[in-house]
Length: 324
View 1 (cartoon, one colour):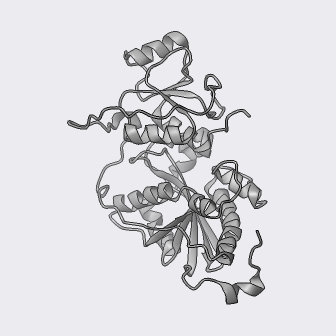
View 2: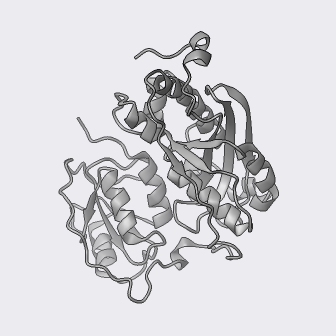
View 3: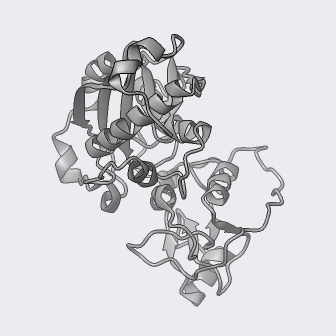
């Protein structure tokens, strides 16, 4: 695959392509609807993907920072950081008139849109572009769709994974050759509409995910039959190591993220959703590990590792491939 160089860009660039991009990365307290942003970074790019400038900020989430072992931002570090409403105008100025670009862009956009809704405002973003979707459009030969794989494909060196500023830099550097490859082949960019949210306005922050239930009267649904996991079970989850494809994951109790969606994300990551806990179960996810449900009792008796939903949703972002 050849990529357009700067000398041919102006003459061959597709007229329908956007005139500017905002490459964004946010780190958060978790992946649920009521989680908060703890840091954000934006690289502004011109129409051809060249970097114009960049910006980074910490954000005080007004709650527990969540998985510190992933993003490295403790309560002490975030205590003096600005609240989201205090950085909302600057953030908006860097997004204004540009296509939001992110790796798994739906997640970043939803977190940003919710923060603006809580601040009784709206982000000036009309379209987003997911670099995972673009990589698929280009049929890039990637082993998986992690940011590190996209970066390695284009020779971009990651320095601090899960640091918003470095992740945004890495993505900006990988997006430019992707954009040029798309332009050379006149590929239609996978642009999606961004709709502002209003439902979180004036909603107080919740201190713990365990207190947020997604179950309501009449919300019961029969379980869906899922295809078998294609990977062998590599065994139990080990603390401080990533999840690995093929692991058997069971869920117990209320979750902030809709259970069906959480299970969908689990299957998409190459994990097996277990309906019960046995000696083969790799991990139990529960926000109430001290409860006396059959799953938590079995997990204790078998010594099955247990994590809460916030930790699990962060682990889902970096699932290791199955052993070859």
